[in-house]
Image 1 (cartoon, one colour):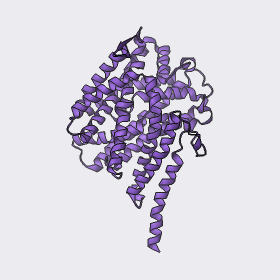
Image 2 (cartoon, rainbow, N blue to C red):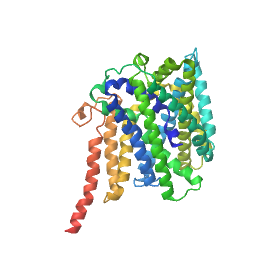
Image 3 (cartoon, rainbow, N blue to C red):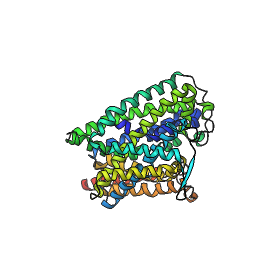
Image 4 (cartoon, one colour):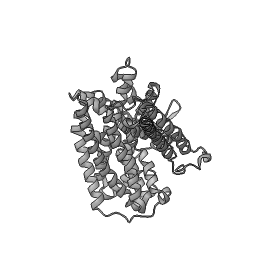
Length: 427
C-alpha cells in the first residue's frame, strides 16, 4: 500500500525526461534524483515512526499548524492530487482520442471537453475509495498494488531487453551540474512532503487494524518504508534508462509522459498503449486515494464540526476543478512553492533524528526550521523568475540550494550548544 501511495503522477513523468536530458551524465543525475525521490521519503517515514507520528510537536502550535496546513494543501488539492488526474488523462486516456483538444466555453471559462469529463470520473472514483478508509489497506494494498507491480515489472523488462538508441550528450544544467539538477528534479515528485503525511496515515490504519503498541507500529512502518523505497528505486532506474535511450522518440517532448507514450507505442502499438494506460491510471488512482484520505483526516481533526466524509467530497470536487488548469501550467506553478517548502521539510526530518542530542530541542527545532524557511524563500523566489542576484555570493545559490549550508550551520550550532553546556558543567 505504501509503495502504491507514493507511485503516482510525478514518479512516472519526471524520470524519463530527466534521463533524456541527462544523456551521458545519466548516472550522476539518477543518483541525485534517487536522493530526494527515494532516500528522503524513506528517511522521512522512519522519522515519523521515530516521533510516533508527532513530528511537529516541538514547534509552536501556530507554526506547526501552519506548516501542516501548507503541506496538506500542496500535496492535496493545490498540486499533487490534481496532477494525478491530469497525468492519468494525458498518458492513460488522451492517446486514444481523435479529437482530445475539443473545447467549450462556460461562464467565460474555456474547458477541454474530454479532460473535464475524465477528471470528473477519475476523482469521483477516488472519492468512493476514500469514503471508506477502514477498507483502504484491503482495497489498495491487496487488490490494486499487485496488479500495478506486475505491469511495472513487465514495462521495466522491455526497457532492458529491447535495444534502444545510443545515449546522447547531456543538455542544459545536466551538462555542468547533473547531480544537483537530479536532486532538484526529485523535488517534483513531492514524495518527501507526502511522507510526512503518509506516515501518519499508515499509523492510523495500523491502529484501526488493532496494532496499538508504538514499538510494533514503528516496526511495521519501517518495513513498509523499505519495501516502498526498493520499489520506487526499481521504477526510477528503469524510467531513467528508458529516457536516456529514447533517441528520436523523445524529440520535442515537453514532459516524460510523452516520452513514455511514444516508447510504448513504438514497441507495442495499441496493445502497449492499453498496458501503459492501465499502469498510469492505477498508479495515479492509488495516489489520489491516499492524498484525499490523508487530507480529509487532517482537516477533519482541525475542523471537527465538518465530517471526514464531507471533506472527502469537498476535496474531490476541488481536485477535479484545479485539474482542468492543465498539466504544464500546474507543474510550472508548483516549482517555486516546492523550492520554498522542501528545505523546511528536510530540516524537520534532520532535527527529528537529532532531537535527543540537542540541549534545547524546542529551540533547536525552531531555529533550524526558521533558517531553512528564510533561505528556502530565496530559492523559491529565484525559481519564480524574480531577480535575486544580490544573493549570488552564497554557496549553491546558482544551483537553487542556497538553504543547504546555512541550515547545516544552524544544526551544528545547536549541537555545539550542548557541548558548551557540558564543558561548563564539568568545569
